[in-house]
Amino acid sequence: MKTFRILAAGLTALAFTGLAHAAGGAKHADGPEAGWPFEGITGKYDQASVQRGYQVYKEVCSSCHGMKLLSYRNLGEKGGPFYDPAYPNPNDNPFVKALAAQNEIVSPTPNDVGEFELRPATPADRFRSPFANDAAARAANGGALPPDLSVITKARHGGASYVYNLLTGYPDFSLYEDRVSEVDGETVYETVIDMSKFDKLGKYKPEQTSYLLQPAGQYYNPYMPGDTRPNYGGDPRHAPPGGFLAMGPQLTDGRVEYSDGTEATISQMAYDVAQFLAWAGDPKMQARKEVGLATMVYLGLLAILLWFSYKRIWRKVEH
Ligand code: HEC
Image 1 (cartoon, rainbow, N blue to C red):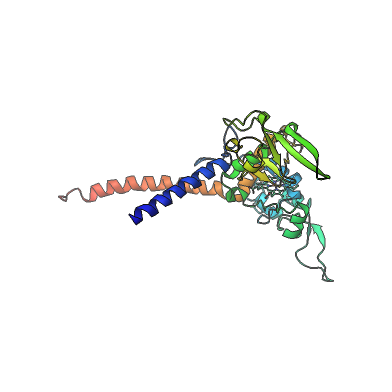
Image 2 (spheres, rainbow, N blue to C red):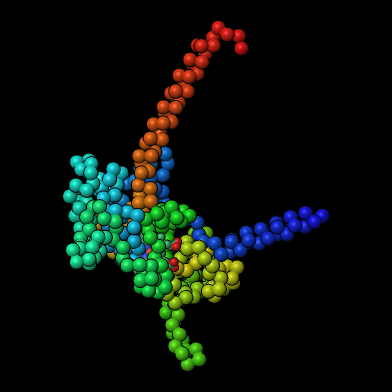
């Protein structure tokens, strides 16, 4: 009987966590409509897209996010966005050298008088970090730490699709409304989002005339894990999925200018930078898939060969 009661209590608790999760969960990251070219056992990164993604990272994201596991030479390695077969050693690749030199870094070794000078990066250097340390990064971002993006597609459920959906999932600027009110003689500034006009939630329809109050320095995103119920103006059971994060919308149409003529729409830039981050988190994917496929073919042929030799060797033996 006792065991039964403990079991029942456990099941009830489980059921409740399930409910809580359903109410506070984030929207599932589906990624771009057409999927990713690097999915599947023969999938490959779209090199032009990864190149454009590097540009988006450099011109937009790198002012807040570092990628300290990457060196500039990685960009020119086999499988990398700027690989050139003429330069098997990326340290010699003039284009990679030029890309590196666009970044000023603090030299990791001191000069003759013991000072750490600023100098243009070389292919051997790690990616430039936007802040000297975490405290400086927090101070510049209202207390929130912009995570290092080297392996972000491995660190978040949904990977590249999550990054893509997060960047494109913010409500349109036209839905934000700034409200100024007086509370006990103090002026209170609030931002509310008109959820009834927010059409990026798919099947989920928030109630009419429902507002979401955005906390100061925070931004609503349906893909960010969190809980919107305390900030929702309507019935908490209909609170929209997602949560708040300290990063606001970063992309606007034409935010970067692509040299290959691709139109820099928000979804194009998000697609490119997410694919670049997928490459950064798994730069050897293509080589691994090629070896894997060759191994499977080899093992298949070996299995057929073994089967026939087995038949031949044992053909005169009763078994
Ligand atoms: C103005 C600074 C700033 C810029 C520019 C910026 N971010 Fe962020 N980002 C942040 C901060 C701050 C956070 C932490 C938010 C938090 O934890 O509340 C963050 C968080 C993130 C996260 C993690 C969200 C999570 O699940 O925890 C991702 C992914 C991300 N940024 C991607 C990008 C990409 C890609 C770009 C470039 C297109 C970019 N960011 C540009 C400040 C910035």
